[in-house]
Amino acid sequence: MQPGLVEQLIIRNDSKIVLLVMDGLGDIPAGGHQAPLEEAATPNLDQLAEDGTLGQFDPIAPGITPGSGPAHLALFGYDPTVNDIGRGLLSALGIDFDLTEKDVAVRINFCTLDPDGNVTDRRAGRPPDSENRRLCQKIREKIVLPDGIEFFLETESQHRAVLVIRGDNLSDQIGDTDPQNVGVPPLDQKPLSPEAERSVAILGSIIDQVSIILSDEKQANMILLRGYSGFRRLPSMEERFGLKACAIAEYPMYRGLAKLVGMTALPPYKDFDDSISILSRQWNNYTFFFLHVKKTDSYGEDGNFEAKKQIIEKVDKTIVPGIQTMAPDVLIVTGDHSTPWIMKAHSWHPSPVLMHGILVRKDRSEKFSEIECQSGGLGRLPMINLIPIALACAGKLAKFGA
Image 1: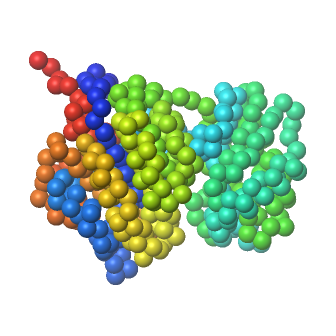
Image 2: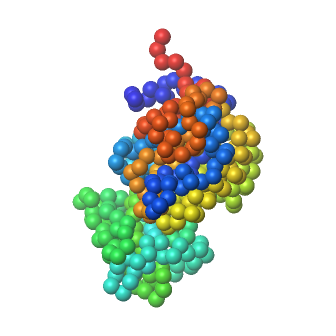
Image 3: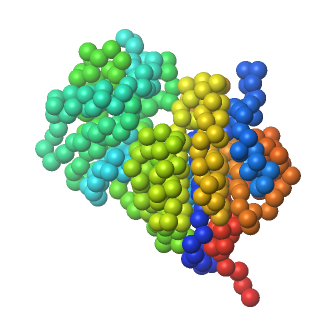
């Protein structure tokens, strides 16, 4: 599609679009099971599928495994191959950390190393936030920095935190230390450009110090760094698509992603019932609602088939009927990417997509499942096409040409 074409055709009206994202929803048959979405009892989603249309969309491109950042940018209608945003920036935005142009932000995982220096747990047992805050404070109290460099370390959630260095002539062109695997040591930081050598040296000193500071910890005895990012802005969804948008999300990074594209990040919800209460209270204030569910992805990464299936069923029982009572003009249900439980990781498999609305052309689907999505009326498309289709079905796109 020609860049800027959708923006030229925008009609601003009060029709409502809800984007329900079950993070990591996509999966594959394995271990004697069908995919969790296949086996889950989802009568409400199945009825929406029968009355709407299905498809399967590639977050980036066929065969490409996405990170959460680029996958969500595609969901929001932003080309992730052009807007390559580091996870550090997203995490910082998610905890309301005010970045400046002198900052380099990086997402860290507290992790566990064995005596040989190999990673045994990339998430240090998923510690509670209170433990995360203790570890961050312990590091802040003992770290030593060169003149002219400021250091910030803030809790994000569980094993995740945000590390920021601030100073002159810093660069985010640095390779990750997270090997994305266990049984191997952390990777060495590498400058991806000559300008990054000073930043690598500063962060390398911080990593070395942290390994000593945390050496007496049983689980969180080291950190892994990934997603280095400087400060940047993107045009908002209101500027591009005429959407007054908000995010209802439990985890900070997804609130950060929403802020990056100009959404109002509402306070985190406590449980699924609370997410619907927030949606109801805000219904008249926005025209686009992004509602994010994290645990489908978490259970996929944990290799827990049954828990992933059960959380899908809980979404169907609680969130979906709650959304339906508000009768959005367009309801989309999908995932940002696939997280097959047998792989315990993101994958390249396309995400199942359900779209429902009065202007949505029905297909022959009878159930929201990955098998039915393969033959659904939306077909197989890049995820960046999702927002334009939703805009059209919400009456928000004018005719092109005479």
